[in-house]
Image (tube, rainbow, N blue to C red):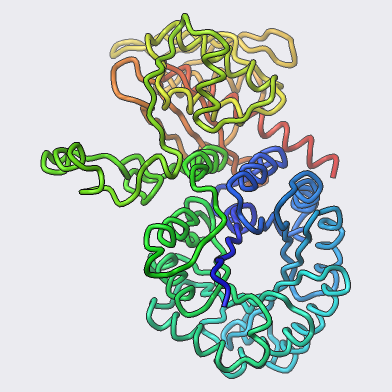
Length: 509
């Protein structure tokens, strides 16, 4: 049996199904290129039949990202499979991933199909996909709640039809690790021909056990784990890629297995996903959380200072968390700026570097020292930029306990200067109303979160907000500044630019 565990990343497909996440093609390509640098084995780029936008995103990833298998999801329907191949055909290593549910509850209430019809659809789907590409994955949706005998019959049939990977999902996160490990063992024992293919698992986190179930499956012989960065995804999410990978690495004497992941890219990938999705990483999140390598207890601090391994089972540098003595400030030049970004793992085009350097200089004028966390915030704001229809020129706010909050906003709208004034229930509300008057656009605010990037009164404020448009689409905006009100205004202007960009893109589809 292979000692390599394939990492199938579905951040762009299942991860994007997280409530409130809406990625444009540019952002999906940024993520895909970073996943390639992380060295995942498979990138599931999307569900091409779902929408024209999803099709174009999968097609773009297939065209541009090399050195990795690119997969597209398709229901067990001819139209889905044909559409998936159309999107994937330019990929260096294309994979069609087709699926159909095999549990009685799904077959009866969702599909309204009997077992024979499901079996036939599964086989026909794999055969059709096989006509396009040699790499075909079949997933039995809700496999864990399926009748074991029927599941094994379906898997044997699709293997005979040409599937090269068979996926056994715990779609609703119902399994316990001991029973899921045993379930995977039983499937392998009872399915003829399964030794010829890669056995995969896709675990959801509804009971907080997605990673544990994935590792139990690997222990029982599964050799592909389907996961997402930061564990994002439907409902409570998926198995977290960084946790699966580092568990296998840290406990390699137990598992005797390896992945091809470049672990020093993990932290940067996590930050990128958090930024573009607008989903903050909880402070106590394993591996990539803000507190993952912090020690407050005096006993712990003393132990770590004497010998790191007393309280750290993972060296932070292994996952890309680095420390430096290089301090940047307003006198720092472009060379030092570029060098530090490279050390942090950021690869920018010349245009992106120029934009980031301008923001760096603006902030350095108001903040004496720029930390790595500040740099990451600047970069994360920069990489989220889309073509600017609206640009913030200035913001003046008048507020106090005895003053009606009033904001004066100056915007450049497609190069034309516009100024508006508005009052509100608070300074942020006033600023947003002034922006709405200036742009003629208004959106429902879904969430508004302020986070201090570092400590101190001059810390950067990182504002992340979500808004909903009239078509019920949710968009994320982000702004950073040492001034909370400026950061708030930047976030609202940012999300408006993203909405305009998305609307223009969808009109082209």
